[in-house]
Image 1 (tube, rainbow, N blue to C red):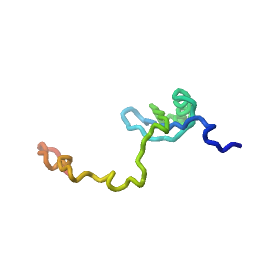
Image 2 (image 1 turned 90 degrees about the vertical axis):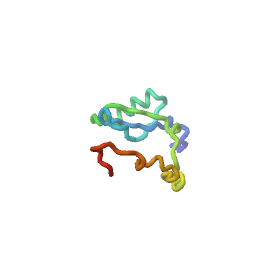
Image 3 (image 1 turned 30 degrees about the vertical axis):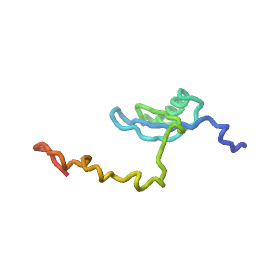
Image 4 (image 1 turned 180 degrees about the vertical axis):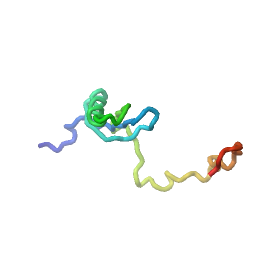
Length: 98
């Protein structure tokens, strides 16, 4: 048995949409030779019980993500940009402000 990961097909991330208009959610990962096969495999694995009406498959190596070590300045809310806060706008009558 070989443990070399290079012998496997590329890894794809699968996102499913439960109903029209709902956001896509990450469902899992699969290995497939190309996009068409990835889509077919994702359909077979993640929609067997009618859980989804739409699928996305994305090559894992195309996803760029932050690292846990990026916490801190990378995720700070930007308090130096007060125009992003709604207190500078007049709310129309009947609009409830939290």
